[in-house]
Image 1 (tube, helix red, strand yellow):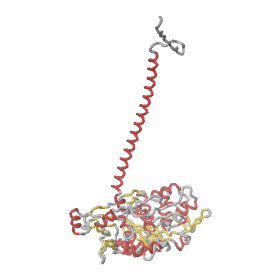
Image 2 (cartoon, helix red, strand yellow):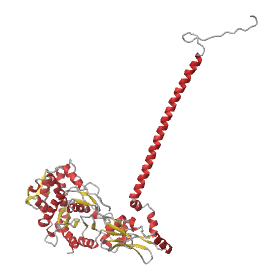
Image 3 (cartoon, helix red, strand yellow):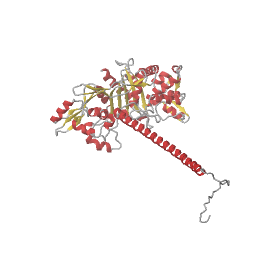
Image 4 (spheres, helix red, strand yellow):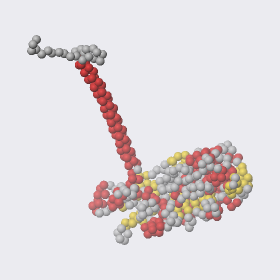
Length: 515
């Protein structure tokens, strides 16, 4: 028709050439929309994973924080004394302004340390026994050592009631600090101090049934009343060891006292035959290029196990040592706390043996007689002897008996604590018999024929190749039937234990038994 516009509809073919049907584009659009929904689900899954991880981290760090807080609470509650005694803790100086530092007493009521006021009105620490308790009681003028450090938490605090403290504050008075009653016996300490005399060395006295330290002497010593005056002198002298507590910190070759441990191991490895042991001593024992000799070149002749121990025959013990299993021997040493930390509160050194399972025979024959690189403290030797005297059970050594108010009321008591069994009761009994024979017919006969019975082991420990410079050792107990007290003595560079250490031990035993 003229004037009319024609409308035509053009259609696109599908790739296959087919004409698209109405609604096809919509269906295609629907498929495109489905793909977008599928990506959205993946995104949501990733988000859920992320938030779960975030929540897991939050829980982990929450548990970690809670555990850390709990640990800190437990640490503070169980180690409050250690934290208090830290030199960075300002609370000490605060309490020192409010309280008078408490008094330290011996077990028999003697004053070992007290706070007094001098002519200028200043508080000073006074030590009535001067040098006698210098290392074990310690001092406060230049830091704190000994029991002054160990009991610092108690001495600087007060148990005075709130009303009493308020009354003292109103009157401008300080509160009385708590007092310490120690396990130290003043009479025994003085006897040990006097017996050691001018010699350098140490004496340790212990009650085996409880672990109470009854006396602890170390020389050379110092006067704690003058520690501020002599400080520069003793600390600038590199050769001086006057401040060292030799009883707990001094390490020495144990010499023949170590034969106690070797004898125990030989008995353990030969439970049925050790009593039948025999050896012909001609005064020396040689292994390859190494030779050891008996002290003073003594030829002991035919000796059994008991006589080898009583006469301290080096050759015989070297012969025994070559038969021992090194690994078992080392295990026995560890059971006796060698190469192990000691259960002791005061500053101390640990004992060391450098023998290994791969060591050669030359090292072995030196170790079994307490020579070579072996090192022990007098306190550790006293602990081993105490376990033997106490049927094989070691009681933890301790020096603080109780904390008291000024009126004598007990605030805290330190009870004896069993560390554990170091050897069997049978082994302990056998060793006690061996040590009794040392006094009856061996190297410690200066302890025989007394009003009490005693047992022990002597030692003469070489330390520089010169036999005349041997350290003199003795460790033993009394009475044999029911051991009450253990005494360990070392004298530096003096000679044989039988000649020098035994007489000192006897004077301490005499003081204990009132002879």
